[in-house]
Length: 455
Image 1 (tube, rainbow, N blue to C red):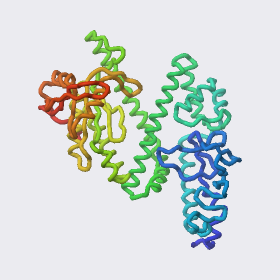
Image 2: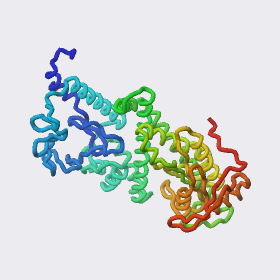
Image 3: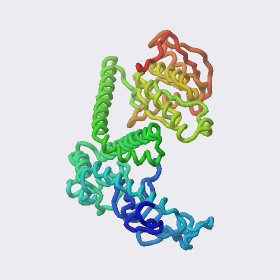
Image 4: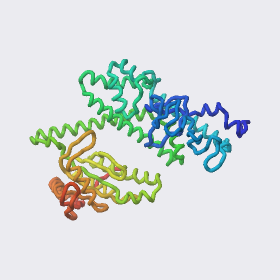
């Protein structure tokens, strides 16, 4: 110690401990001062166990113990705390809690204080003002039904808050009021109101996670930080990047909306020109494909968490790039599998074969198998459904490692669109679960050149 205090004095210094108290993350995702909280959970864990009424998810209120007899100080009915030590400071292994290293305690306090400052500063930047509305007050201020404020908050993915708890800022009030006004004016239904807010909450939540994890990964890879150091560094970096991230979000949203509108318009014109009457149940003609890494489960058992994340990251990056260059869209990714769409059967074939070729050429990645089908489907909020989708998924299951498999009808559609560009390598009949016997064709490249990423 170099501050003139003894170890005991430094360890129990109330001022140090009070200053190091971490802000509390409340049920609505906000932070408040004054109450200690454990270190932040890993991504994917619940953000907080505190309810708006002061009770946590275990049913423990501010002045009572839970069903197991554990009180707010962490000790249970036998005086044993969550860390395994009893009321006399002895842990289960017989060691004495009074023997904690003073320097370690100070370091922990210092880290808590740094995290508290970082979260507090970030919240001030993000929320752009103090909280001074309860849900009831917000509804009165905006002149909208209180029910809609609850629907909005829940649909955004946040835990419900008590009607009289002060959690909302001016920006919250404006956002909820603006969308709710569309319902009140009869421009959209309450169902659409919930759907829009749910979509915004889901995708913006994913985007926030994506951006923050990108900064964490960079700090770990380029600066050699530990995961905890990298996450704290991310908290300090976000305010610097906030404006550019917001600008990019709005720009990309507008670009994507323009692209979707153009695609929808072209389909309307195509139907009008050909006098085609679309299937009302499955009106969209698309090529849909599924690609997954072979023997990924076995591979994951031999890799560390960071190595596994690197494999998944490389796989997803290659797939997204190829699908985009090929004129398709990624519908979703689930670990080692990706689902994509293309507007024509030949585009679907090009993407499917290019995925297989690119993954095979990438060191460290196992082969990929791809199932592809062309036909009608139904689209709902970014996902697609129907017999054609089911067929493509089942075809993926019978594909050999590194192979692309289509059904016979899809192979004919591809050949009719671009004769000689893609060739049949083999043909066999498979009984596909829930579908029946299907003639599956192993697709190969003919005289069509592979996709170039142009990098």
